[in-house]
Length: 319
Image (cartoon, rainbow, N blue to C red; front, side, top):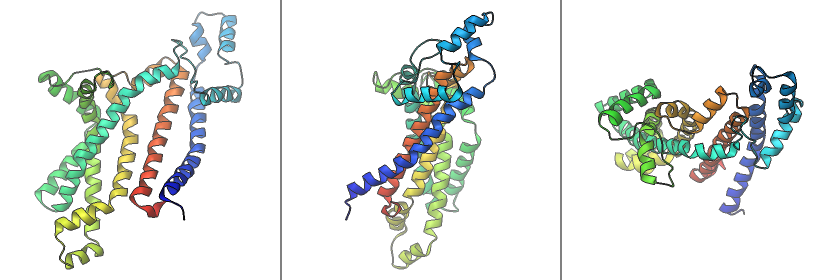
């Protein structure tokens, strides 16, 4: 009989094997979609008044004179060896740019996810346990507002009040976490709050609905008939059975936050992955855009892979 550790490694291997075709497809899309953008990157690099000879030299220098599939295979081979090419404009290695811009983005997303769970989960439990009361109505109203309010508008409101009016938080920028953890969290808190508003609303609403459905089941009615208190039913049986649903919501929410940071970073003038890809796209710096897309896809796949592993730990029946 397989040990739990062997089962866990077996599950990880199966999930990783299933993810490999998705990773390969992601590399193809990251490389191929940018080739559909109108215009000639060689002309952009050479300048509008460049001669045909100079444009041809640029194409040869960057391998743009090769066929699409040869360019893709050359790029993929470099990626497999940890080389994401260099910026066409600054000549800086793309990996160096990503290493500089990824930590602020991850800090905001992680902090926003923690805030979403820390605030949304208790509100969902409170609303489910007080179903039909004013507390339930208040939580649902706050949930509706959290989903309806655009995060960029909430970000500007937070800047105008907590940052500019009261000077409680910095207005813009970020600080490396390893350099000064407290100052880094201080800078990241407002962006994380703006990003977490929708997450709080979604987690509270989803958890409330799941708990209400569970507490209305025949199993819970049987427990009530045996004399168990409502609190014991809620904490010992209710929350134990909503773990997978809650983990699914958190996983999807975190993936969406990674995309939503593009707007939040622009509002708070944070040099993160969102700012990096926007500037690169506007300047037609294709290697940077390709590298950022690939890294973000890999992060999403790792998040999903981690969630699959946690599913098996929460409920062994899904292994």
